[in-house]
Length: 199
Image (cartoon, rainbow, N blue to C red; front, side, top):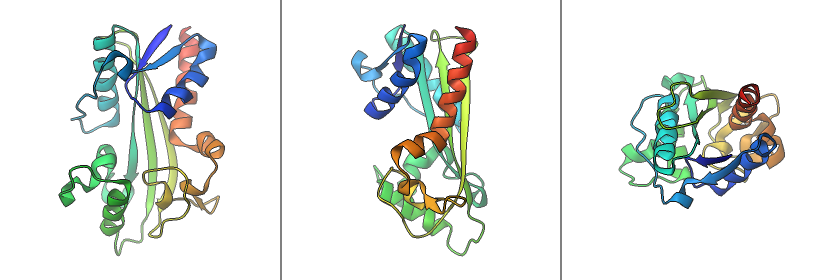
């Protein structure tokens, strides 16, 4: 069964294909259908993921899979949250880089000792655009924010996201270890179980 992924990220396409192939799914990027990204105006990850999945399904006439993820910091009342990729927009940056977003986060946490944070990934699978029963899986990865970047792997907030029990940041982990532990890895495993139950 062909499934459109509401993303053009080659890494995500490969990862989803590897996990879902045993269930008979072939995951295709939305760019293959000329589908552009849709707006993500909602305040929650699940609403944005659902909007992306419905948009991709509607324009491709296929089942769709979407992911919305980010980082939530307890002391900042959950921010950056759904704005994780665009957190430094308020610093008058049109397309903030990872470095811009990290700088904004560290600045917002100046003089804050409570640094608990978690990454979240919400995956949504729908069979058709108006599917009333979307399959939803959410994964969490607990850690804390540190001021100094460590490690050269990963992307986004990874160099500042410390996993206390490992004494390493997400950027210091191998890709294999990160995929096992990460929010997206956990969400994928939960989604896989739900899809297997429906098969």
